[in-house]
Image (cartoon, rainbow, N blue to C red; front, side):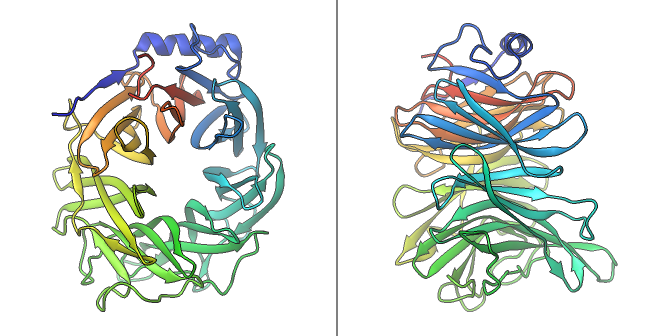
Length: 441
């Protein structure tokens, strides 16, 4: 049997972190005493609250750029960008965007800087709903260009819920969901379709690229990948199966040509769609994160929810065959978490783990609102066995949330998230852990 470990940061450790924040004003090199270059917690922030959602690792100069949202004392929300070295030392921090922007994703841009995705709202505009915002920044974090896009359906503004952005070399694909009112018998059903938008490298919307809508009442897109020169796939969840039945949710993926229209792939009944999940009433599989798999394909992770309310982690894999995405199996793997089988975990990020026993690092938020912790695990390459799991935070007092995870070449693990250091006092948390998800050997 594979070994299983569990690591929990005690309340006393968090008190040390909080003391460091008070003494060192949130962004110095000594937030945690004693400080070890290989294992640490750093908190970054300003006045107000700062939440961490994503990161980009640069192996050449051994730095990391962290993305989050800062809520200023005035209530304005802007993008919060931090650059630090792998020892956690602050290099710079920047604020970008308007007065009501929420950070979603950051990737390396096509010109060597960064492309940042945000959900934006302008309460003074005619369209006061959520919109897609893209910001292109230099390697130093300075804005180069930006664009704001809002969907209109049947004359009504929709609520754009962007989730991720994918650089394609000559363009960017935004993936997410679109919420809009569908007038039916109940006069108020909110219908959600997956959102797929293409912008050129200079952030001009490609009007010829089709914006696709799921036939399900509820659907969300998580990530889009290019699998060949003329083929892309969007992966997400919806509540229809391959025969158009519902209402249970499953993982799904849908193929397009590079102009956004359907091409080969899929089957006659699905029109290019594939579903993965337990196709039974009362069983829902909702995708939340995707990363490249070992070999050609992708690793998918989300949650499996039963009618009793029980919630387990759910994983699946899809392969690339001559540019087409194919299922390894129509059923994924229900992963029971060690120690506490009823632990409520929402995965938010996943990456390959290349050192030691190969597998995947899965980062999530554990618990319920008001008493949440950051949770990290490593699973094997099939996604069905847990090597170890770690829990960070004091669940009885804090409300900490996970953002993103990455593995360094030497096996160390970087995590960004949100740490609650007091009543409604949130700071961007940056963790460096050993290869077992711990703060010590």
